[in-house]
Amino acid sequence: MQDILSVESDLIDEYVRGEIPRHHRERFEKHFLAAPERRRKVEFAKALAAVTSETGPETAQNVTRFESPAPRNTLWAFLSGLRPVPALSMAAASLAVIIGAAWLITESLRVRSQLNQLRANQQSQDAQRRELEQQIAGERARNQDLTAQLERERKAESERAAQREAEKQTNPVSPDTIASLILMPGLARGGNSQAKLTISPSVRSVRMSVGVEQQESYSSFRVELLNPKGQKIWSQDKLSMHKTRAGGAIVLNLPAKILDAGRYELSLKGTNASGASEDIGYYYFDVLRK
Image (cartoon, rainbow, N blue to C red; front, side, top):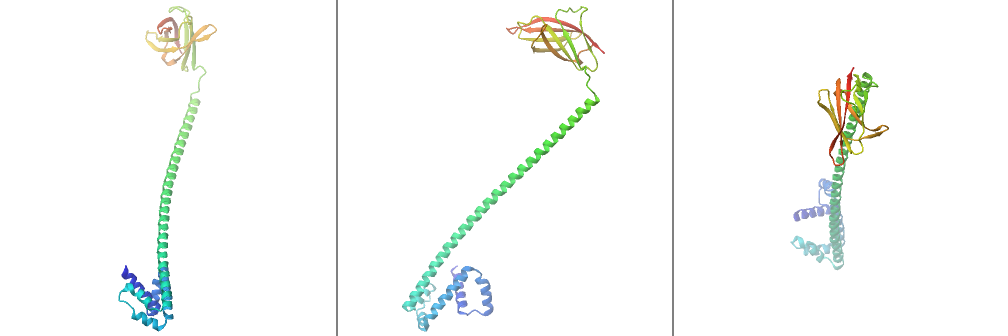
């Protein structure tokens, strides 16, 4: 590094003294003086040369006489050979150069530190921007997925509604899709006043109203339905009684498809306060199929 600075100083001195050939001088000005720091060094060398020329030949002889072969003492030898006033001027100029160089170095370090900090901040901002862009892209993709899913669900619901409407038009609902039957207590199994239930092909469900005489001591009810062969085909528990003008009634809804033609038996049981089940009564009815 010291050798490079020495060569640089020699080039500047040759340029100031006009010892560089013309074609080399143009290249020197084009390339070497492109850097601001080198231009300042050349200006200082010119100022130093001007001060030296003002001291006269005697000063130059003295400078030559007191030159030291050691490169690091050249400036001191030069200053020592000058007369007091020029020597002081040169010393002041040298001190100014040293201070200026120190300031330049300090300023360069400060600017470099600021530049590094700015680069670090820029890199951090770039990273944050990329992360934010990724988050925005992810949210946009999720929104698109949700929109597509909602559109598919809306389309499916529209298709189901159209299908239901088509089924209604193809298979219109008959007003007699529900058949009703009222069962009163006290009817014997073999009596002629048996309740009758007629079921047409359009009937889908049967609504039964089972009358109850002893209702005050039961918290809930259970019913069981036996087909003409005596097999239990349907049951339901935890039923409640509804008050009517005639007393009380339990309402049942049965699917019509489980009822074939024949005589059926419906048993009614009640759950008392202690949780025990008691038989309340038996109801009989005939089913007719069209």
